[in-house]
Image (cartoon, rainbow, N blue to C red; front, side):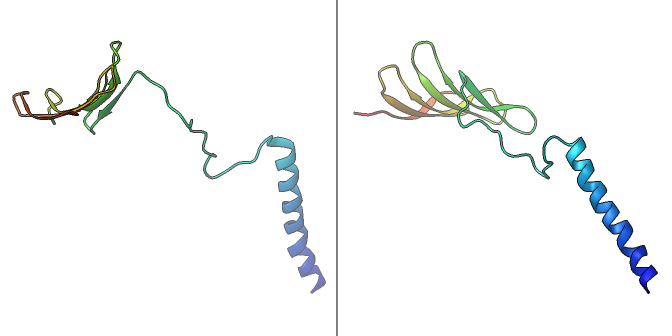
Length: 111
C-alpha cells in the first residue's frame, strides 16, 4: 500500500514543483486567456468611415477646414447621400434628408 502511495504522490509533487520552477524561470509575465484591454479611451481622427460587410462606405463622420462638422449617411450603393447632420462653423445645426436623386426633401434648422 505504501509503495502505491509513493508511486502516486512522487510524480504528482514532481510535476507541480517542475511547473512552478518553469514558470518562474521561463515566463517573465503571467499568461491570460484574454489580454487585458489596452484600448485607448479617446480616438482622434479627421474623419471616420462606416463600411458594410462588402466594404461599401455607408457613412462618414468628418470635419472640414472651414469648420463644418458633419455626419453623412450613404445609400446602400454608397453613391448618394441619404441624410446628413451638420454643424456649421458658427455652431448652427442642420438636418437634411435626400431622395434617391440626391435632392433635399426635408431640412430642419434652428429658427
